[in-house]
Image 1 (tube, rainbow, N blue to C red):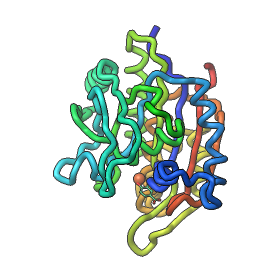
Image 2: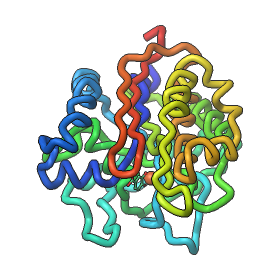
Image 3: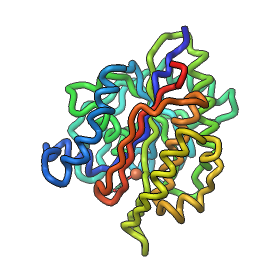
Amino acid sequence: MPAQLIGGIGTSHVPAVGAAIDHGRQDEPYWAPYFEKIEPARQWMADKSPDVCLVVYNDHASAFSLELIPTFALGVAAQFAPADEGYGPRQVPAADGHPELAWHLAESLILDHFDMTIVNEMTIDHGCTVPLSVVYGQPEAWPCKLIPLCVNVIQYPAPTGQRCYDLGGAIRRALDSWPGNERVAILGTGGMSHQLQGERAGLINAEFDVAFLDRIVDDPAGQAAVEHHEYLREAGSEGIELVMWMVMRGALDANVREVYRAHHIPTSNTSNGLLVLENADS
Ligand code: DHB
Ligand code: FE
């Protein structure tokens, strides 16, 4: 039996969400409405209990400096410690990797024409640890193994939404050819609309975000064709992070079931989205 893709999650990866969890501030008036909304997704993860989480995120110049900018990088290490992003590493567990499955992914993806950078040693920044906190809360140890997949969206040129969507399809082919029977969840992280810099700092576009949520469910091929300038214009300079949700969507079947959706404005500077999808035939 091949690996079983139990579903896909799209989630923002706002560092302040991690700080709110780490400092026990979830019940404060600013945070309580957001944390209430994410509870059903946590319940879904607890029920499904995947063995492996493949987390698609962007490193924010933490593990990789601007000296080296891989477009797609796959972590094959046995363990991933939280990164120090300037204020000490988050006090969350290091994540155990799954080197065997990660190397299978590397081989399958590269032979399938996606030239991944293979990373033997890397730390994981808020782009990865915050989504784990979103879906798992504060366990002593993360209840899954982690395979991190980094996408460059911080230095122009980022890969297109189409390329990310196609990478998702190649990930699915890799999982389908893995002889183990691990239960795998794929997380696409980042977004939704936000801009942290420049004249339009603070930009949020709820209309764009809701349309993105609708379309990634029902018309992923159409959403994949959306070009960078539209994300930038409509969702701000950091809204481009949404292309990483397309990797997650590309790994799923054409027909999916929307299990859960939440949208909360704002957390920090960001329109915060959360989407749980399962293959319709599962
Ligand atoms: C914020 C959001 C991000 O995606 C990020 O990487 C850093 C900061 C924010 O909203 O503060
Ligand atoms: Fe980010």
